[in-house]
Length: 314
Image (cartoon, rainbow, N blue to C red):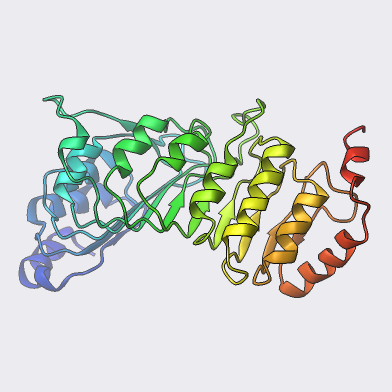
């Protein structure tokens, strides 16, 4: 299409537009320039995958779309220019109605406003329901960065921090969202994966156990004791029909801890136990149905209570 044609279309029909999709292409820069000049403030949804991320960032941070509800930036897995400077405070002020914010395979570099104003002086993203800052590479996201993004997001339901190895359990537990339904916090890059033992998962299962439907902590280095206690809290605080997805791949989950959660969570229909070193051979795999998980429970019930102690000696 011709960029000039898009300009004319926006002038005539801009108020009716609810979604914009830009994919990688030769004309992205020209299209973004056109939209930046002619952006109509009535746009409610926009999904961008441009080659020049600075262009779209300026577009939104200038306040061109105050009614924006969905913003997504998605880079290719093999992209070499994944870093993106972002002033979250300015974006929060420009897009206060944002409900879904996704940055996939992008490494945001958090910047402060020039006047040094603190993020707590604003309202943040009060309507935000989903935040995704996932990457298969290294992430710069820290506890402070996460707090500055979500300090006002009491309605958050989905939090995807896959690859964010700097985030701590205490920072997650301090978030103001009491009814989180999906937490994706797996670590998938062996190059940047932490090998230090960690605890604190219990803080999260205590807080969100009643509402969690999906939990991914793949390759997180929690101790076996912390995992066992966290699973215990999960079974005590959750209804049997709540949890449906659980990824424990690469963790130190033990048979007793696993047995308790599988026995209690009857709605579970996906369970990833691949590379779980404290489980016996034959159980370390992905279970994709309630039937397969019931068969797993039968095998777990047949194991001796202290079987995991023997496995740790290898």
